[in-house]
Length: 65
Image (cartoon, rainbow, N blue to C red):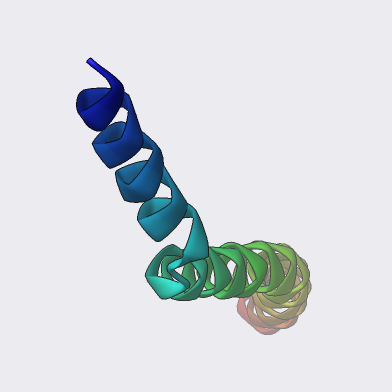
C-alpha cells in the first residue's frame, strides 16, 4: 500500500514539474488575442466599406437622375 502511494506521489510530482502544457496555454492565449483583434478590425473595416459603398451609391444615383 505504501509503495503504491509513493509511486502515485512521485508520478504526481513528475506531472506537476513538467512545463509542456504551458506552451499550449500560451499558444491558446495568442490565438484568442489574434481572434479578438481580427474581430475588432473587421468591425471597423465593415463600417468603412459600408460608408464607401453608400458614397458610391449616392454618386451613381446623382449621375443617373
